[in-house]
Length: 317
Image (cartoon, rainbow, N blue to C red; front, side, top):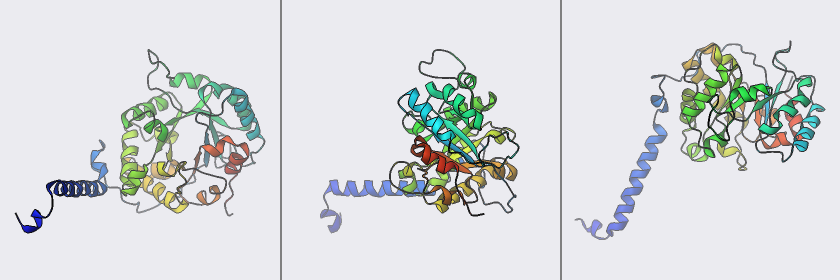
């Protein structure tokens, strides 16, 4: 043993070695090519050589989560919102395909009556989640046919809270996406990195892996009905902010992933929302970014005036 080794107690040596090994593993993880884990095969996610002139209809969605407390409150919120929409708001099937589409995601018990309040002004409703089975002994679950029967047109799949709180993994999220599409509804597929993944500088790898796994089996034709929502989990309800330019960079990267999975047409036609604590103060700058096509709004959608301002975002003419 060297004299330097004799001066260091064994437990300290062990801790030092462990820290070095952990550090090496973390460094390796930050450099790993996450796409190698994706069943689509080896792919190169490089920026497009050309850009299509894509005009994508803006889409604003309000996710009410476990709010409000009563049906009366839910109907009051919906009614208040109907008075705040501008002329630029319309449903997806209106003649002007580039006006703003608006979708509300109330809790299950309120969906039907909320729809009755908002449908005449072109707002559609969706379900916050579904189970991928059609029927059976699955206590507490709802099927796609159930939510479709009460007027849902959209379903959230893979929301960050479903991933973290309810342990939805990519395999089950993929099954939900496929079930939603096969049933004639439209999924809003949510993806995004956690704070620890962001700190490791692997947000692109995480987002690409989630997107690739969650879209397994989805055809190019079906992608016309898929909306992607980028949720930087670390910027939701934490006080931390993902800037509009940083968010746009991730959206642009996601288009390169879609191009590799499908083609440039799909990459440029797919609408990608931003979902990181959007507010009336941040929406205008977000919507000036070329690859941000709308917002998935949480807390601000529970105040009619705030969500109305978000829907009626203003961008330079």
